Image 1 (spheres, rainbow, N blue to C red):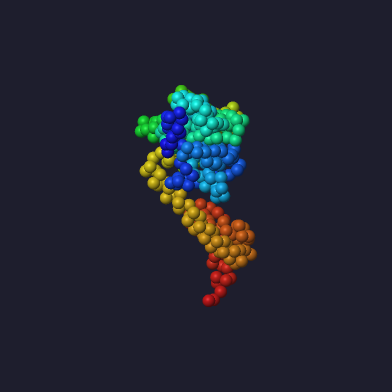
Image 2: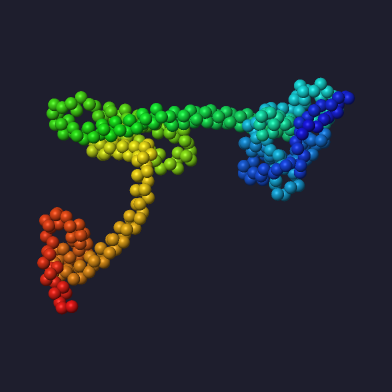
Length: 375
């Protein structure tokens, strides 16, 4: 809101705060005390008059409230990152008006600090006059607000650079070329692991073979570096919540961590390293949507399958207990105790040929007294 101060027959235009109580919206309450840097009662200039206002500022924002408002409602606020300048009112007005140096204006704006905002921000270029109790408080207020606004602008600039980098990373990560290269590397990594497993005996026995010309450790290092760079780009492009809430990203983290562990000087367990290399193909499921359509229903069926397994286990346990009671004295090897009875029932239930090689006595099924007794 523009007001005017009369000085020496001329009018000086000032953009001042909207009067308390006339603000169209109350954005929120004042921040808690532990988040505030300072909580002051200052004069705020509007309508050609100084009005007492409660001025609270944090590292991010300057808040204005009525002095007698126990509800702590905010009537106005200034984001510190959008503060253009913080100066002594005398210095600021001396370059905006030829009449400010007159005695009347000096009296009106004594111990005052002027806070100007950017034109394209939240406050649309409004200028705020804050009057302290004395010159020392005005100097401290000027110094604190200038330092806080400078720090806020630096944080905004750093965040803007981060956002630009994040958008650039997302652009490259989501491009068809990058995704195709990722799929090719996953397939080649798995093919290299298969080739290593196929030729492991020839390489170990130093037999003349084409596999001797392939350095599988070097290939593994190249794939690991690529997958690590891919994971870093993915994290930068989708940080924070979109990245950590995606289950496929956690699979990628596990695979990359396993791959990196195989490159260290302490990686002496060759068998474990080969297993970890084979796990990398799991990342393919997170890249191909057609495979995800198969994997996701299978994953959702895990809990129902566990419930079904629990039911079958309970039923088998009941029959194993009955088997111990009925046949334990006749065949202690197969039904003497619960665990043997349970394993025997599982073997019989499978109906596979390997069951015939086990000393399961089928005679007891026909010679047990309870089965031969008349109905």
